[in-house]
Image 1 (tube, protein in one colour):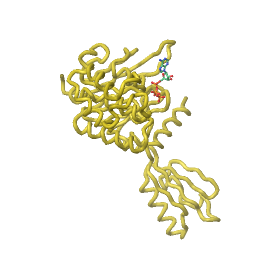
Image 2: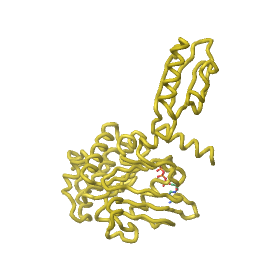
Image 3: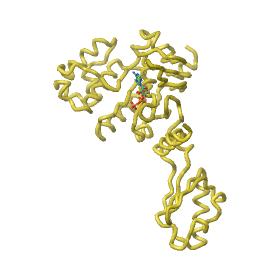
Image 4: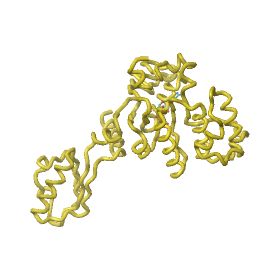
Length: 312
Ligand SMILES: Nc1ncnc2c1ncn2[C@@H]1O[C@H](COP(=O)(O)OP(=O)(O)OP(=O)(O)O)[C@@H](O)[C@H]1O
């Protein structure tokens, strides 16, 4: 194994997936995930997240490009990869008549070197539900059982497809804490999510997918930094946008006016805010409801979806 493979536990290069009928769901995706990193794939519905993760899990053969997990092709060299990987599919299908403990025991039978079932159940907070039949679990509890099963083999790499969908706020936070603890213990985690706050708070790096391509990637801070910050305020009656210093001088890259409400976009937040406030002070103008904020991941996400829709 060379240095690059040690560093990058998952490597995806120009990956393609085509479904029957010729629909290209994954259109040349590239990214890599380092050991001990949490990497999130974000995207609108149908962006290609699940299609990509399934290729990483070795469940299908790519139509083009290359996937390596721990240095192996997960489809062709399944036997080498599978024991080191934990998978939580978007919809786990368990026999619903079995209890939680029986399900975990059955699953552990398929995993070499499995950790004790009660330990895996305790990790996800299902220790007290061991004797309950799977069909009686809530949707959120089933997701947690899915996660417990993925953890049975003490995997080096964990694939989590929408791990917190259906969980309440507390369950979601508990899952985040568990995923962080696993990462801190050296596990590499690749997850998909619809929740931007999940990606922002949990992931070390993200890739935003759009229509089968990577539209943006980096740390959440890097992805949001590429989006303009926003300043909004109301001008007093009798004042108009033209009374401000020229917008170019303020470093403004876009603006909207709605009555006396002014919204400015800038890539130089400090410069724009400072010049605006200096002007307001000098002109003795009060900027009502002044709101100054950096872009959030949500804005970056919506911005990408909008940009691509316009470009299409
Ligand atoms: N078995 C299939 N046959 C044909 N098309 C499929 C199949 N599975 C998925 N697709 C299509 O591929 C595209 C990507 O789907 P995918 O499930 O990977 O997206 P996703 O980003 O995971 O979406 P979501 O957030 O809704 O789960 C979609 O347009 C979907 O309709």
